[in-house]
Image (cartoon, rainbow, N blue to C red; front, top):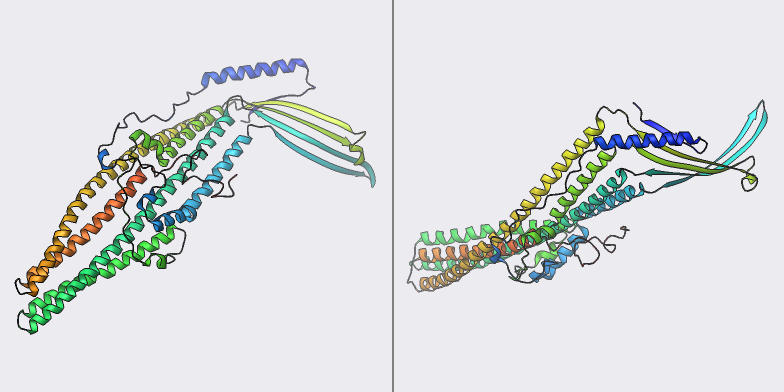
Length: 493
């Protein structure tokens, strides 16, 4: 059934205006009887712990902003900066943010009057003779009275979606910065392992040569030579695997910075020290961390957007009031439009309200309510995941620090044992099995120590990311390393 429409113009007598006012009042009364209840906002996480369970793993006063600088590696800082400018996921999120901003402006425009212009020219004939010309110009204006807040709710939803899009951009930027750091650590770790393997290989090859000389002198058997050669070949076999890891990490870093996979091969070829972070991280409280996490803020804004869409769907069931008018000039000649032309004006007020829609309006409200419930559940899940991320990172950091301390002691002892065994073997005081075992132990503990050091650095990166990565809402008052500004995107108004 088409919507019921009532209209009035200045030429309608006064009694018709009274009837229109009565119809409007009746409509408002009927709507108030069937209005739905607007749901509450996103629930505050009332079970957020007051402190972290492993808060002793990281303490200090260093802020999170630009956390990658604490590693003291200029190349790492440069790669992160390049990724934040050129990564394809970030540029795509920036485009989504511009789209959300434009859609917000569209919703904002719906609250304002609309003004249009028109013009026409007509030449008529009848029986081969001219019947005259007619020229018209005019202005048309219309304004939808948002008495029930449908357009305002649409604007609120668009604004919340814009903020969610901005926070989502921040979340992607935080993730990309952490991904660059983790791949860089993987590369430096593989380079360190390769250096350890090469150093041990050189020692094993030296031992192999000494064993061959001793065999020629009849001091050892061929069995010792073959065992020495086996150890050397096993160590050499690890080098191609490590080289593959190095090159693949370099490919990942190049793609993260918006380049072809092999673009950074020359830059990353030279080995570098494994970046180490200090222990002076400022560990925020759980509730503060949730405000610093862009994914949590984005989920919160999505709840606000869903809430506004519920209100919008509810208001769409109310009457729609519009005011319109036109003002124009008409004349028989084009020059007559300026003088001697007739002025034509009209004013229109209208109201429309679906009398029967088969329950579509209520169904739309229920659909938006369900979407709101989904947004609330997603928000809750995001909060719990954020808390878990921090707890996991703190536990891993504490455990890996302890493991690294023990492995460093073991590596020192294994190196001393291998050196002593080599001296004694050359002097004929110990057999080759002792040398072989001490060399294997040294290689194993050195590789494990390098891996543990890389794990500690990676734990710092994951902790920085879990704490929000230094992201802050772009309010124009803070120097946010992730904020989308006019300098980073000239198309942003």
